[in-house]
Amino acid sequence: VNRYHISLLKSAGYQISTTAPQGRGAVSMEFNESSFTEQTLKDFSRLNSFGAPKFVLVYGAYVDDGSGRRESWCPDTTTAMGLINKELKDVFANGTYFMLKLPVERQGYKGNPQHPYRLNKHLKITGVPTLYLWHSDGPLNALTLDDTGCQNASK
Image 1 (cartoon, one colour):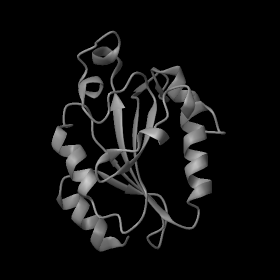
Image 2 (cartoon, rainbow, N blue to C red):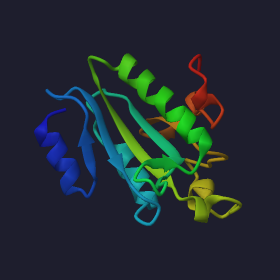
Image 3 (cartoon, rainbow, N blue to C red):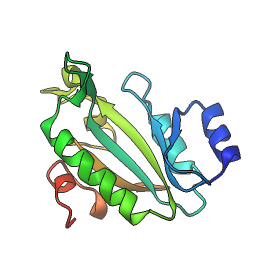
Image 4 (cartoon, helix red, strand yellow):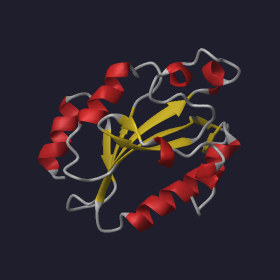
């Protein structure tokens, strides 16, 4: 992954952040619920990652807690994010991976069986956070972690 690939993703409308120099590390793309469409996942599925793994992370959105700190409304997300970030950093210390981040706003999610991430044929989330290893056809279900699994380093 180099600057050219990043520029292509940006020109396609992805919000991109990289966490490592020389084309190694995470390439992160984030979509909020209002900009998410079925096309978002289709584009991510077709993205040529040049052999690098792709992940989709659905998590409780971060909100300002009133003191200037940003925390997730979801306690499971707060617990799991440190573990997820550490594991990915350790596993891909000398390589690249792609991450599509889909934050979930509490107001439209809690108690709403019609939430778009619950109904999406590939996501079908039952809780947040949920981490998927993604390939061109969608998630590899055997490697999909639910809100409990994301907190367990052995998974």
